[in-house]
Image 1 (cartoon, rainbow, N blue to C red):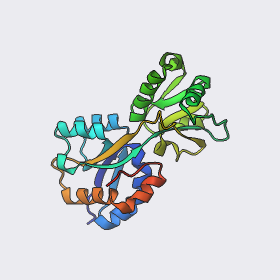
Image 2 (cartoon, helix red, strand yellow):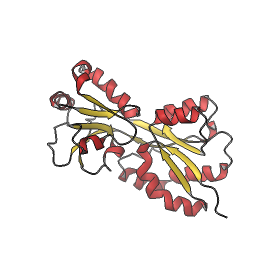
Image 3 (cartoon, helix red, strand yellow):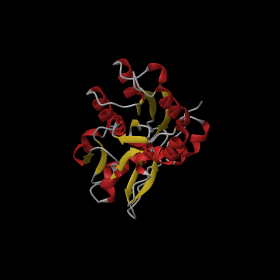
Image 4 (cartoon, rainbow, N blue to C red):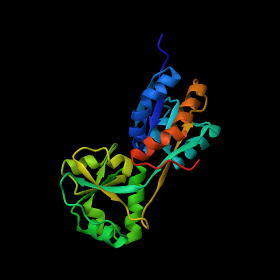
Length: 232
């Protein structure tokens, strides 16, 4: 009889890493993985509403909140990766200069439309950045809000001139060109953390899953996806 799947609720930022590591993890554990993806806010809402899971991977803030609510075993938490924000455009489109804070600000003001995530951590970070740059009001009518998933798809379809999101979520989108990361003095990093469900019936398997995901051998895959492996 096939062992029941280990249910993973994860942010889209780790989708490429889990897809690459999935077969290896399944062989090592002897049971399949069942991965479902959503922005961290949506994951937290699903868990708060009672959805069952074995491991959650979300922003550190979301995991900490779920831990405080008794949904995550506090001893199981482990940082998996971090990601900065970047910019993508439709494939073949003009690539704006975003190499400095002033250049990035000019690129935003020159763009007709800019897509951001409605619920993802990147969307909130970008909104805060617009306020920091003093252009939140000027950008208000240019922002295109995207739902769950990879918002660079809007750029690929021509529905937005620029797309701003976590780098690991921008790079895999076909039909787009990745322009680059935000300039260092504006960069905003989000740390993604894994945690095991409180009362999980597969504690040992869940712990092995997190151990493999955070092992040095996983670091090259994490880096290749556009994320950064945390210092161990």
